[in-house]
Length: 234
Image (cartoon, rainbow, N blue to C red; front, side, top):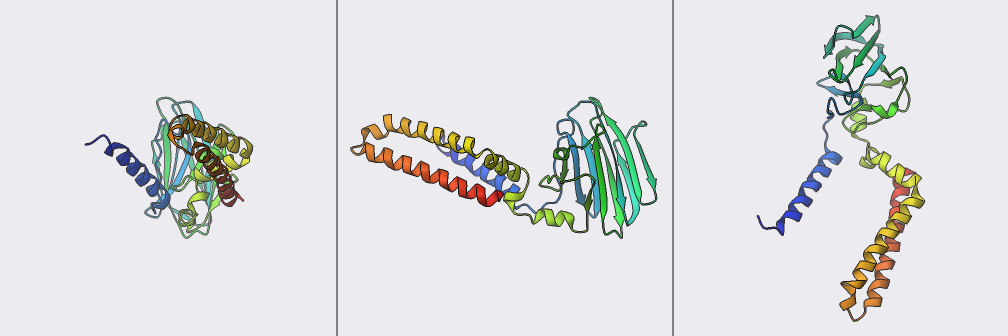
C-alpha cells in the first residue's frame, strides 16, 4: 500500500465508525466489564437487561425494579452467594457487591403486560446518574428512580444525534465554557496562521492579503461554532 493512501484510509475508517455511531439502529449497547463503571440497561428480544460493572474496584450496587406488569422470567447473571435478589409482588429488589475479582453482575427480565417499569439504581448507598446508562447511546436518566415505558428504547434511538450521549454532554460543556472554547479556537487558529505566514505565505506576492483572509476565516469559524453550539444546546 502506498504511503499516500494511508491518511485517506484512516479518514475513511474514522468516518465509517462515526457513521455507525450516529445512524445505527441497534438498540443494544457495548461496555467492557472490569473497565466500565456503572449501570448498563438495554432491551434485546423483548427482554430487559440490567448489568452493572466496576473498574476492578470494590463497589456495592442496590435498588429495585417495580412494575405494574408481571415478571414472567428472571435470570441472574454472574451472581455469587452473597448477592441477593428478592421478588415481592410487583417489586424485585437486589443487592450485589463487586470487587477486583468479581467485576460484573446482571439481571435479565421478561416483564409482560406493563405500562411502566420503575428502576432504582443505587451505587455505594447513593446515586450517580452519570453512571447509569440506558440504550445504545448511553442516555443518562435525570432522576433515580426513573421509569421505562413501552417503546422507551425506540424513543432513545430516534433522538437526534446531537442530543445523544456523549455528543450532548460534549456540546453542553463546550457551550458552558464558551469563553475558554472560543479563546482556545482563536489561539490555536492564530498559531496555525502564523506558521503558514512564515512558511507557505512567505513565498507569496500577496502574503499580507493571505494572512488577512486567514484571520477573517478564523473569525467566521468562531461565529459558526457559536451558532452550532447554540442550536445544539438551547
